Length: 168
Image 1 (cartoon, rainbow, N blue to C red):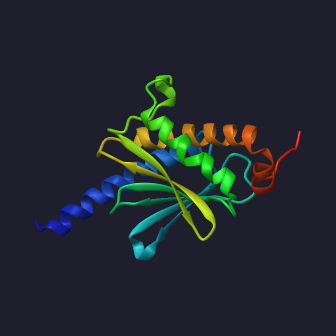
Image 2 (image 1 turned 90 degrees about the vertical axis):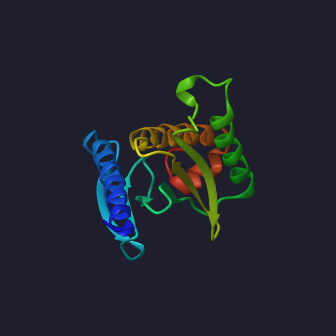
């Protein structure tokens, strides 16, 4: 067996696990209207779905070469004040011994970061080990929910403009 064959199997196993856990969220109706497509010449897989009552479908991209899940362009036209809140929020979840365990991220299993591209912000989740896909997807869902709630409390005008909803 050559190295490339082995790498393909590892990548396929990762994609298979990501696909399984994403589909479980779709079956529970957390992610609605789930679609899957190959991206970047087959080097990545994008899942699009409706979630969190957001106006546009979200894109979750699995990159097997980097072993990351990325919520691409989640925050459109993000202003500096909102952007300045996200990275410290993520850092606190990764270093926060003072937080309850269910709110913390075990950095032995995954890390979370914020990335900005063309004025839009993405959340990037790096999977640390071959058995950590379920943990990563669960934390991605929980952390994103918590971040949205926190942003609605602190930056409600942006959240209303960017994602819609009631201004009450």
